[in-house]
Length: 257
Image (tube, rainbow, N blue to C red; front, side, top):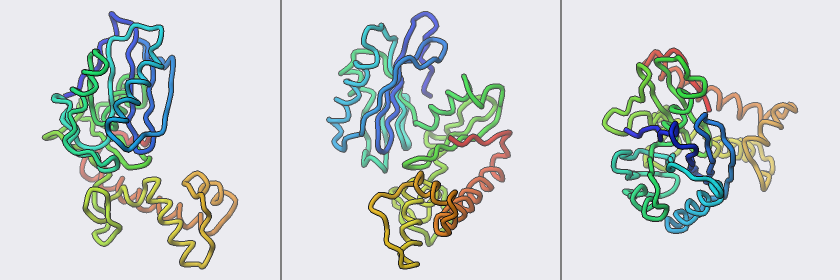
C-alpha cells in the first residue's frame, strides 16, 4: 500500500497528479498547504511525460529542499512496485513509473492511483476527516474511485475502487477499457460531450466547434432545452452509479470531486 511521505521532520514534498489531459505539480508544506502549483498539457509519448514530470518537480521545488515526490496516476497499479498496470486514457500498460522517475529525480518516490490519493487527502485534511467509511468519486476526463473502510484504503487485490468501470448499460458506448456501458462513458467529460453532440445531431442543430461540460452547464442555466436534457440524463446515470455504491458499501458519506 502506498504510504504518506513523512514530512514532519522535513519541510516540503511535491505532489504530482497525472490526468488524462494535464499534469499538475504542487509543492506542499508539512501542514498540507500548497505553496506552489503548476500545470501543463500532458504529452502522449511516455518519455516526454517523464521529462514533463522532471521539469515540473524542478520548477515547483526551486529553492526548497524536498523529502520526496508523490505521484497519482489513473487506472489500476501496483503501488508497492510502482508499476502502472493499465491506464486506459493514456494508453499505458505495465509501466515501471516509480523506477523510471526515481532514476531521474534521485528522490524518494511514492506512486498510487489518483483517486486513492484524493481519498488520502480527504482523510488527512478534507471531507473524510473523522469518517471511518466513505467512497470517493473523481469526475473528470475519466471517473475514478476509492473506498475507505474503517479509516483505511480498501485495495482488494490491488485494483479495488475502479468505480468508473462499473457497467450500467450493457448496450452502452464502448469504453476505453474494452467493455461497454461503463459509468465513465456516461458521466465523464467526454461522455457528457458525446451525449450533447448526439442530441444536437438528432434535433438537426449545428454542433459547435468547441463544446465542453462547462459550456453545456452555462447553456442549461440559460434555459437551453438540449443542454437541460443532457444534464438531466447525466444526473440520472450518476444516480444509478451512486445507488449501486450505496447498496454495496452502505458508506457514511460519498465524496464527489
